[in-house]
Amino acid sequence: MACVAFSNYQAIGAPSTGIEPVAYRLGGGRSILLSYEGNGERILAVQVLDLGDQNSLSRSGEILPTPTNGVLLPMLLIMRVHDTMRNQLVELELREPGKVSIYACGPTVYDVPHLGHARTALTYDILKRYLEWQGYETNLVSNITDIDDKIINRSAAEGISESELAATYTSIYIEQLREFGVKDPDARPHATEYVDQMIKIIEKLVTNGVAYEIPESGIYFDVSKFETYGALVQRTADDLRESAQARISSDEQKNDPLDFALWKAAKPGEPTWESPWGPGRPGWHIECVAMSLDLLGDNFDIHGGGSDLTFPHHENERAESEAAGHTFARHWMHSGMLNVSGEKMSKSLGNFQTLGDAMSRYGARPLRLAMLQAHYRSLMELSDETMAGASGGIERIDAFYRRMQGSGITAGNASKEVRDRFSQAMDTDLGTPDALSVIFETITAGNSAIDNQDLPVASSSLAAVTELLEVLGLSQIEDSFDAEIDELLLNREKAREEKNFAEADRIRNELQSKGIEIEDTANGPLWRRI
Image (cartoon, rainbow, N blue to C red; front, side):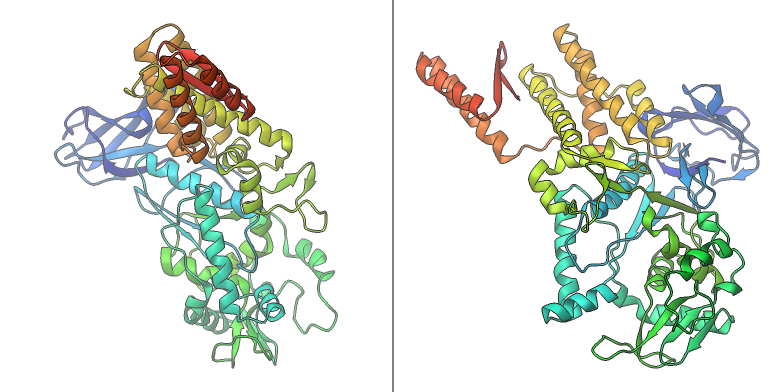
């Protein structure tokens, strides 16, 4: 069943206290028709307007607060996401009406961020942006793992402390994500801040008989005591055990090759914390359990991350939390991996690309557009051809704005039909490729409207493109190169006014050498990259 949220939207009619329906205007160009019964506290039925009969939904028996003064308005979100646990598209069912809680696994900060980090962060940035555009209060938590074997090893190699190394790469990660257009999450907890909470969860697991101690090694989770282990990846423990056995050294004392560390006993030279089992440090999986439950509470709405984290990391989180008596995530979402020029991105293959290098080479906006042109769950191909197409797309967006400005068009009211089509695309498992198609079709329509001197359509197209690009974080940004071009164009116009055509031609040639083509129009010169 779809979920009902609350926000301050304008009522088309006063709330009814009988069974007569009342319509409400929603974000994204939608309206809904609500039928109440009794004193208005119970919704009898909900119908989405202007989207076809297939979107009519019954919500008999749903108890909702009485609308007051036509302001407290229910909003219908018909959004489906691919739930990894159920392995199918499901309607997003929220813990609390109008509020969406999301935990997205962040990086282990022992090196600069790579393109895989960027794609994962972008997925949940887009999810948050879209839900907020639809009027939802969204709480996104994305962690920093600042204690791990890789951090310990690299800090030792560089002769600095683990905290210094982690702080350095945390700053780089945050700075580069901001440059990439990813907004900061609502909370960015660090694992080392939550060790006390981790210890409490481990104590509960020991008490519940699902964890055991190996002397001088640590505390381990007993997978045999958790009946549904493997459900997140639709495999049995026996299936997983066979593949895990090959990765386990023969001298390990674990009861089962699938068992995993909750607490690691102290080793010389490693950072440690005191615990009931002696000094040591937490295992990786327990970190996210402690942070997500502390900041979002039980039964939070969405747990996300890259598909490479599905097993064992996320399945182990699920096992830990549920075995400790908590209700964990309601939905699981995972973003796909990345190929570079036809091969999986890997340091060993020599095709590894950092986010910083990619933005320097291609630009942040073209890189962001390229990632959004692939569905978030798909295997994305990043190649020079892909990036050439994305760069062309960004130039098409910017040329649209220059033409609107040159034609004296200002933004009017965004088309409801365009916003509805955009919403339908995004409501289908965050369908950014189809959503982008809507935007580019609207750009084409806007340019045609200018050609036909249809100013109302041009104005509406400008408003819709501007609003929807903001949802995807692709808003036009004037850079220093644009400012340099604009200055050259002003100098060229001044030379033409003074009939200094030699200087005007010189500037045109200079712009052409920079890859800029000029079109002189009645409203002044327009330029585009060639």
